Image (cartoon, rainbow, N blue to C red):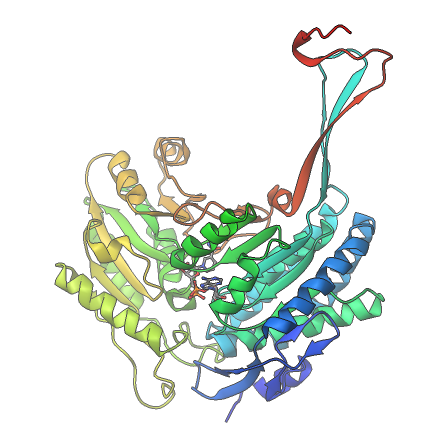
Length: 513
Ligand code: NAD
């Protein structure tokens, strides 16, 4: 019994009961084994997707290599025009695609629509960028010489994505890669394969209308073994991989071994520092949305609150109070705030983390647990938990991809809070809540947050596409999306041109013949 217009959405997106999971555009390949995609919303089978065989993978890469040769010759603003049309198709299909994201992955419908909006936003950004892939001119030390830098298309971009942003991560990469003249091969998460089929259907329509060849946008499906075909493949100069630190450790090493480039977007362990002057009106929604939004399954989810002892009781009570208002249930029903976890393995991990925190001496302030009964049949719905803990607990040092929020106390200066904030292996997102200018600036300084994202008076969760997105340390160091993140999708070439009649050498070296 699917409801909330899911069947209609699937039809609009061209999703069938059994779908081919391998495509080079408008050509689809039969594939091997099947992956069944069950909705965490109600436990029902949504559809199946066939996985990519070794032989099909070869055909996909050969087709991509061929397409690259013509696509890179197309002027960048014309490639931008293709991305503009793609963005418009996404505008038309925002409702059904957002619904599929929500139904296959379990995030709230608003967040599902929000994810598609991010795709639209990055398309707009990329269209403008297609006229701004500028290099620089550089003064030469030699008379009659000029130096400049050019950015050339790179080749095939291999994209490996996580389940929690099953469509946006692909678009963040492809929209930029395409205007840069690259072609893309995407291996979606095996936990949300239907999203990849829907996305491929959308772009395939645009490519067809523009008479563009096969191989500009390809999808492959399957688990890490299919991902490994790409990471070890020297024909793919860039692998952009989003997922756990465990995955990144393997993928990064494999790609480095063959001197490929990798863009790694891995796990976070994000904290908000709450200082004595923090405004509770800002703190409470920022912290609560950050901790329970997407059921704690965002890479930027708030996992730790680092609260000054002078305001600790007040902040704790306000947050605990706010948790009482949270409504958990079918994410397609807009009255619910929190949907399910992705699957039962994830529920196990969540339960174990709570047990571990207790065993290490944590004090539970808001009890967790799995919800049962009507509406919770999938077994994936859990209660967001709050635990008083220490930063040194082993479990606090790890990212648990679930709604568990740890409250930590600090005393004295903001430096002490910054030490706690930085005292984990991950370095994605961070925030400080303060009305003290000096505290805010210290937090943003070289001696402040060591994360790729550092915010003042907003939470850790969610980012706009205009900025570069990513983090340091075990988060992998990659940057995607806005600012100059496009440069990773291109190769840099330094040119020196001599327009004089002499050949002076650099550094004044004499070489008389
Ligand atoms: P995961 O690491 O289990 O899987 C991610 C992807 O990697 C999947 O497509 C998987 O098939 C593939 N993969 C796994 N091992 C591989 C290997 N050895 N070779 C090639 N491919 C391999 O992650 P998940 O559970 O889907 O997602 C949750 C994780 O993703 C969290 O840690 C979260 O913080 C992180 N994440 C990070 C960002 C970011 O931008 N920093 C964004 C979203 C999610």
